[in-house]
Image 1 (cartoon, rainbow, N blue to C red):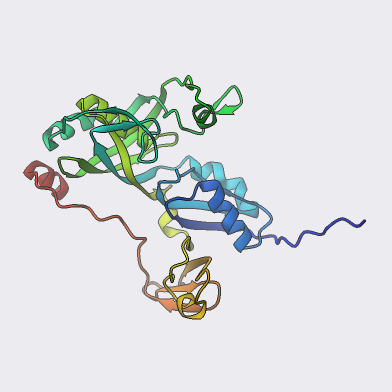
Image 2 (cartoon, rainbow, N blue to C red):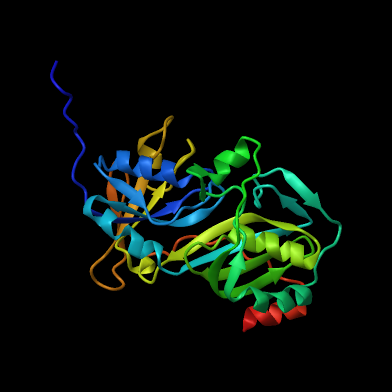
Length: 289
């Protein structure tokens, strides 16, 4: 019996994926690896299934540079829901603690300076940290309580964008190893009201993410996807993926390609979650600064 010959190709370079919610990072890499028929691929920085946004994926020889991208500064926009703490520190977990208290914007703003700089942070129980060779989230799913120790992390900036009685929207710039879910958990505990991340979007990884030459989206539903595939593939997956290559001349837009055809469209930034207008004058003044 002859050995089966692989049809995978040598693909080299980076793709900046706009990861959809509901897909973990490993699954996202597998999808793109299959779409590009690549031999080797890996990502630079895990995103939780709940999270959306920037997930840099390296192919072939580019995987050798993954550690350098992972070490870069990351930026996030996230929403914290007050009144409930979960075992995963996000909306996918089970309720672990509750409170009827709700923080005022002034109380939140007073706490933020204490979260900036190099600080100790206790990682969430549901994290990819290894304990005696096993992932913490595997131990937690098996009913065990992972024993984790606080680790030093660096948070360069943490800004309150809007504040409502039940939730608040923040932006953070932080270094490698920082858990946004832990920031939400610790803010809730410090305010005495508990909290968890209800929405999270990563907007940047490293200084060069916005200048990467390929931005890709994976469509995960059977609804018509934006672009030409919606008209050409009725009744099935409308598009497995689409990607945009920056045009060589400034202002000339991008060349967008999906599974079936290509077209040119104006250059657009990745979509951002809406920021609710705050009723708090203090929060509004913070937003305007």
